[in-house]
Length: 260
Picture 1 (tube, rainbow, N blue to C red):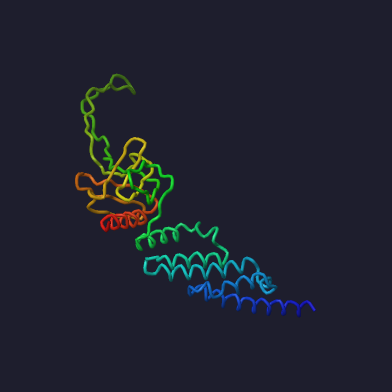
Picture 2: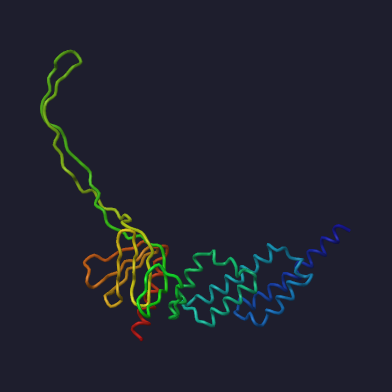
C-alpha cells in the first residue's frame, strides 16, 4: 500500500509539474494576462499541493529569469515590457523580493533609462533649482591620485675600535625621496546626484557641480565613472556601486534636456 501511494504521489506531482510548467511557459513568453486566472486557480487547487513550495518557487523563479533575459536582451525596457515584468513577477509570487538581485535591478534601471524614462527622487539630498528634478542619487567616493614615495639612502664616514667589542663610528646618513608609483584613494565621500540639468556631488569636505552644458565626455567603469568637463583640467573620478547605471541616467537626462 505504501508503494502504491508513493507511485500515485509521484504521478500527481508529475501531472502538477507539467501543468504548472505550461502556465509558466506562457509567462516566460510575456503573456501573463492569458494565464493569470489559471495560475490563481492552480495555486488554490489540490493539484498545487503535489508540488512542494520550494519546487514551485524554483520553477517560477526560472520562468521569471527567462522572461527577464528576453525582455532585457536589447538593453531597452519599454513601458509595456515593464508592466509585463511586474505582472510576471506577481504571477510567480516573487514581487516582494526579486529586487534583492542587484545585478538584475541595475540592468532594469539601465534599460529603462535607455528607453528615455527616468525616475524622480522625492526627497533628495541636493537642493534643487526651479523646475529641476533629481533622477538618481547614489553614494559615491571622490577619488584622487596619490604619489607613493619611499626614502632611500646610505651612510658615509669611518669607524675605529675603542676596545674589544666596542667601535666608534662617525659620519652622516644621506638619502632622498624616490617616487615608486601612484595609488587611487578616496578623498571625500557623499551622495552623487544626477538631476535634469546637472551632476552634483555633496561631499563632507567638497562639493562638485557639473552642468550638462559643460560635460564633454564620460569614462565608465564597472564601479566608477569619470566626467570630462570643458572648464576643468582634471576630470573628476567617482567610485560608485555601478558606473553604468550613472552613465545611462546621465545620458538619458542630457538627451531629454537637449530635446526640450
